[in-house]
Amino acid sequence: MSEKAKQKRLVVLGGGESGIGAAVLGKVKGMDVFLSDCGKIAPRYLEALDRYKIAYEQGHHTEELILNADEVVKSPGVPPTAPIVQELVRRGIPVISEIELAGRYSDAKMVCITGSNGKTTTTMLIYHILREAGINAGLAGNVGRSLAWQVAEDKHDVYVVELSSFQLENMYDFRANIAVLMNITPDHLDRYEYKMQNYINAKFRILRNQQPTDAFIFWEDDPVITEQLRQFTTEARVFPFGECRTDDSAAWVDESGELFLQTPETSLDMPRAQLALRGMHNLLNSMAAGLSACLLDIRKEDIRRALSDFEGVEHRLEHVETINGARWVNDSKATNVNSCWYALDSMRGGKNTVLILGGKDKGNDYEEIMPLVSEKVKAIVAMGKDNAKIMDFFEGKVPVLRDTHSLADAIAACRELAAPGDTVLLSPCCASFDLFNSYEDRGRKFKAAVREMKKRELGV
Image (cartoon, rainbow, N blue to C red):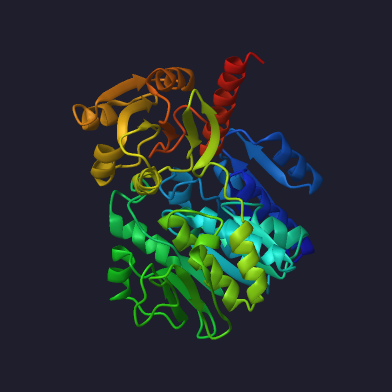
């Protein structure tokens, strides 16, 4: 048999960051790699494919070039219901994730974070702590670069990996040395047959293969996690965190406002007032990040310093400008109802928020935010191609409800409605794919439009 015939054939479905990273790693490891994307591949990724001499196609899937695979890496954006994926499963061809592939070729420590909300801030905060402490850390997964691509080209001692439920779906043997589960609230239910348990099961895959030397960090006040843990066991050491101390707590705040972090490796305390990030949700993010750093044996002074000087995450409660006395805030990353709840909870000053909602609905139940809407929202501006669900739900429940179908029209409506002392809050509850390429695209275009409005006000 020729050497060529002995090569493992790896097919990658999807030509985004995750797919290209998997293809590069497969090529570096000597596999016969073919990548297929039914859409258009971005020029920067085409350059990488050409540089590594990886065969590819775009605009369609050619079955005979895919169904001869020994193994397939499915990018997270490719749903399991896609016809080509269904055919692979029918034929018994293994389908894995990029994260699964990367884990086979790395002995670095893996700190993995998931949850419906807060995972990006927590991931970035852990990464910040490690970098500030001089650790050779990589940032990967849903933020940063592809984990597989870094394993192929840019090795690190520790990887901090944000994992969406989509990325966890086809993870089998991968092991998280530290697994962080922030919370579980309804999200992406359209992907999971509108069954909450299916979504919960995807999130809990982060605990697969953990060993007694590993750690599981979780928010002990989350009712979904608490219920799931009644029927789920893990070999890992558990480190619950919450606002108030319980017998099991590893992180809490006492009545004086002192934050405590306690693990076998490190114990420290610091005034909550010194944390860079404000709000209850950010306190929980800081607890999870601090516990992760303690478990990695980072020096106490490095943890305290990093928790106190972190600058936050783009598109998460990001102040853009103040125009005519009204604050404009970009929370485009709020792609589900619970994330919007946290944003509204952080608003201060009574009924003075103009809230922008809308986008691609994922099975949202807006009842969850209704108490805060009643307390804090003076107007809702719906922004999307189809706002019928939002308009129907909030009709008669807010003083003002506007229906807009473009960013320009939404901003014009907000400008008209916002008075001095108000906050215009883009916290959409929905995915961005009806009018924008991503939540980042939505947030950046929102910021650009607001800043342009500010320039016009100043006559610049």
